Image (cartoon, rainbow over all chains, first blue to last red; front, side):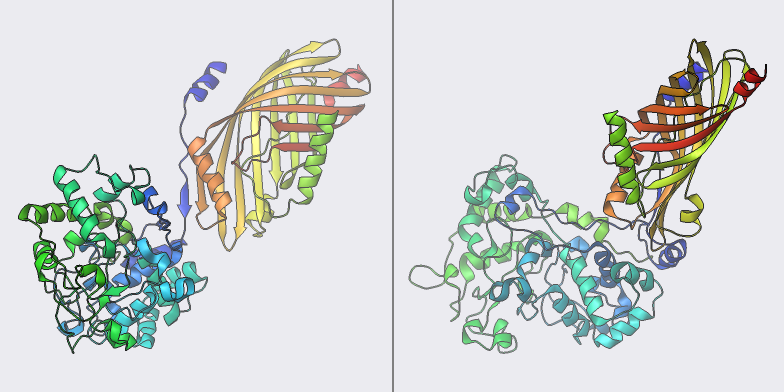
Length: 383
Length: 245
């Protein structure tokens, strides 16, 4: 008897429990249309040390709303022709950007401007929204007309070139789909669909998108207080380290030394000598002369993936972008002072060919492959 | 005495706050029989209390051969109330069978038992959220009991191997509960030493005893109900037979 007990004691089988998040009926409905796991993904955002030390922090994400927001983000039924979703212009493999100058919306209409990559929203999500930062808030769209990700989602849902819906049409489209009922119940306690709930859910999903596991981040986290030291990285090649130095000297004053939130909300970078009357940028929204011809200053995370570049996608490659900043800045009235030389004329970097290649090599280290492959952000719809 | 008082107070205090509480294990009363000779037989019933429950306990002991005995124990707490009536809290049913050996002493007996028990632990958290576990326990239990004409007491150690062969849980429950469940899943099986004490008065052929059982040391983060106190009434047929002779 005791030998049997010893045998039992020696047999150390681990427990293996089943967990249920949705009821069997709910999960059966969801599974007809979606590849969602039976337990919700965790969308908690946690910044690495070098971002935290700079005082950056992510906006809290509500898990169930992010789960719902993911489905809404990829749902083509929320467009007038049933063929366009948020993901049509914001592709995960491109850092949630696009690879054409002007994206294609409903009925093949071209969008007004280049799709901004969303894969690093959480890097600055705590800094947008008047509820948190008032006049210091970072905004959305090239003209900064949306204060929050929720506002941005509505702007795209209702834009006639993008998804061309009224919000009540969006609500009706959501109500018509059986898979939303259990998701709304989890997110909001009941399955009542409203425009605000749709926007809030998409906002939570977008707020969870963060890029902070790039090669640059891996190296920066190893340096004690990188924000104030800017040393060479041991894990970088010599070329990448040279490129890092050029970036810090020439680009960081606008685009951030640690790839956190951009240092400026909007600026003119001298793309044109005079403001394009068909696209006055932030000036169209604010009506201020100082904002004429200025546009949002984006983060450069995943920049190697989001060609073409600038608000109108005029530059096809990073080489063209670097050459523009090296020798092509125009003397626009509102050209930012960071891009002016001592006498006020447009800056010339005078980079050698080698310098340009170094800078481009560095920019490639800002790609976060983890984010690009993260299944939590992938298309949940069954094909 | 101070230890017993502290346990008693702890059980009463926690039991008064027991409504809706959850737990994932509790020690049933450690049976400490007094066995003298072949055909000694005793059956006990009583009420038990712990942190988050009250329960009905049943115990039986029988010696079919000299120096050999079998025991059968049962523990039933709020099982139907929680599972069927959807009352928030924990419902637990547990039955165990043990075989062992004993040696009669001048006053009392020494014994050692080993066995296995199995049961079901069901927690309801509200809003159709629940957890449901099969519990299995192997044990080895040496014990020492003292008995004179009117008084009895005993002490036993129960070395248990506690496992959860099967289980399911809703995911959308309190984070602390989910953490406990996940920790159980990760860390089981558990090897738990348990201490049993009892003391009672003998009103032949009945014995009225208070029993204290506890898991020691504490196992934090698992939401185990650590203490169990019971009041048991035992009928000892063996004693009746010996008296009649």
